[in-house]
Image (cartoon, rainbow over all chains, first blue to last red; front, top):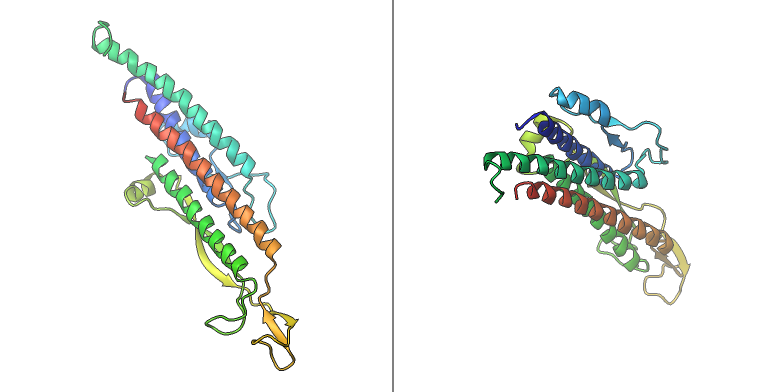
Length: 113
Length: 145
């Protein structure tokens, strides 16, 4: 892609998207008997994602289990939902400025379109 | 792009909670129904949810390749309450038996109302998830501007 920074951001966003998908799965299954909360180990995955590996979804330990075997905490998922969206916005802003720099370089610094 | 399949996951949640709410409303409406096509009083219905991988029609093959599969929810079964109906002494009722008792559905409106609130809240949670993911998608699109 562009440069190491931009491709790191790109992977960061990929990972956020993968995590958001797990969060939406957890919310959709908040009342499914026996369903366990899934998440990715963000930091570890980010390091291995940079090396080109794919994220692995794992069960989240330490959440209280309901009488029907479900351990989804809607509060936890709501927080993650918001957090992921905000992180994604930050990454998007960074990537946008990277692209802007690239665009300026292409147009020879003679103003942007 | 895995964000789009997040939308499918949340949509499956919406669908499941809507089905559940419909059945709960049906239970409330039929709380006093003594005649059904199958005979006997109405029986309380409830949903069974089960988790299953979602396949967005377009991205399924690609998604299967990259792992981190989203898990949607679906109503796998609708169960009918098999407990004995509630007998009330109403000798003048056309459905009364020889002893004058009428079989009414075993429905507790309070229980159904609480479940209905829970279904509504879960529906709202899924709507919030859709909104958040939609914002992420539109921000990605903004990158191109």
